[in-house]
Amino acid sequence: MLQEIIKFIVDILKVPAVLVGLIAMVGLIAQRKPLADTIKGTIKTILGFLVLGGGAGVVVSSITPLGDMFEEAFQLQGIIPNNEAIVSMALNEYGTATALIMAFGMVANIVFARFTRLKYIFLTGHHTFYMACMIGIILTVAGFSGWQLIFTGALTLGLVMALFPAIAQPQMRKIIGSDDVAFGHFGTLGYVLSGWIGGLVGKNSPSTEQMNLPKNLSFLRDSSISISLTMMIIYLILAIFAGPNYVENYLSSGNNYLVYAIIQAITFAAGVFIILQGVRLILSEIVPAFTGFSEKLVPNAKPALDCPVVFPYAPNAVLVGFLFSFVGGLVGLFVLGKLNSVLILPGVVPHFFCGATAGVFGNAMGGRRGAMFGAFANGLLITFLPVLLLPVLGSLGFTNTTFSDTDFCGVGIILGNMARFFNKEIIMAIMVGIFALLVIYNYAVKPKNLANKEDDK
Amino acid sequence: MKIMAVCGSGLGSSFMVELNIKKVLKKINKEADVSHADLASATPDAADLFIMTKDLAASSGIPEDKLIVLNNIIDISDLETKLVAYFDNH
Image (cartoon, rainbow over all chains, first blue to last red; front, side, top):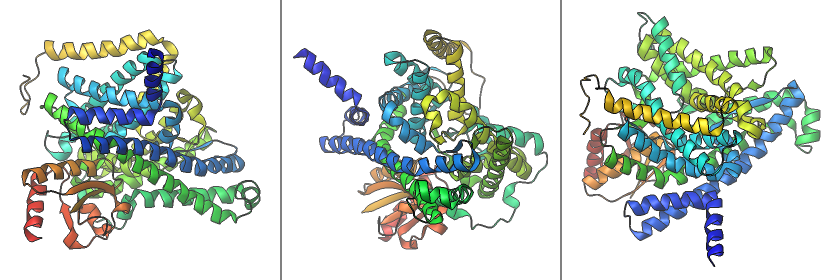
């Protein structure tokens, strides 16, 4: 009897969809929500996870021929970085690890904010989810399993959730002119680089906001449209280079090769669209619970919010940043081609969101010139970092897509390479050591008197 | 009554706006079904009221009487003023 109960519990925990449902349910019960809301929220979360899996199938069906055409045309592996695509593929194998690392990582974020000087609560839920997945993949490939995987993963996630907003905060203050909100989006390394370069090159450069720019690129804001358009261009180029014979004989079962290319391109966008619906459903109960707990437990922490929070402060820099980041991506692609390495194609979504944000940071630190050079540097960074990430992703390094934003790559490259030199126990000790040092620093070193620093009660 | 918060990818910032809308509704004692979505899903019949930032409003295709435009995503008092005005007029 006991055996059967244990087996039942283990079987439940083996199904990631049920596991995220349980996590949502715990959050709902802890908030003392009415029974109807609890049932509704739990089912919605499970539904979201299954919808996400369905989207994965659609994305994979459209991205596999892309890799085939690439091989045929250039004899190289070509990759389109897209977080949604890689996460949806990874969840088959790493779903349980992702769900648990995410849940305990949020707890760890609150613990970091409560007991260290990194008083930031990371509220961009989808990035928390993707980062949990990335950490789960890297640690599993490095040989972690069981409680060690979840413990080390959650501690790492909690650290990066509190650390990256802290890194961005000095520049963030400059952009919005106050210290009330922080910046929470895992492209921080690119933004801080952009701001730093802006500060170097942008002496006396006027702000981008004094330029008159056409406003007609705003339709790119609609991510499903912009994904469709760029994928169409990429697929059409590849179909032409691979040639009609190859495409019609091996891939499209006789359909015209250009029609096939266009349909596959929009199918990719459709897959991402479905995945995002799933992600929204998964997060719809978990994020409010997380927000509620963090407000209660760490009332003096700053919320770290998604990219668009800085867009209104410099709408022109958004456009300049996107264009120059994209140019950086194309230059990077050309360099990779010369090196005969894996090719990283510029995806419009990372360049639009990360490039645009890099433009805003660059502009704040160095005006027009800062926005241009900073965003260009960001474009190069999101082209080269994914190449370095591939070797530590295990078999997921061969799927024609990968993580797109700088911090996923940065954290992945550091963790993955740590695993090459240290064994599991040492990596665990390092993470615990970092936490302990931060706590000791918080209680031993008197804070410098900041004008708007609240007293630590 | 359905209210929909909208942003470019319908993930991060529209979600924060949704949570803020819920806070304001609680404060002014109004009931509504609040959700968040991306621009492509925000068709005029999807909700009774849409809330988004200035940069999206122009290309959204939502009629003006169903639209609240925010100058700043994080400014909850601006949101409250505009929501109260909306409820006074409808």
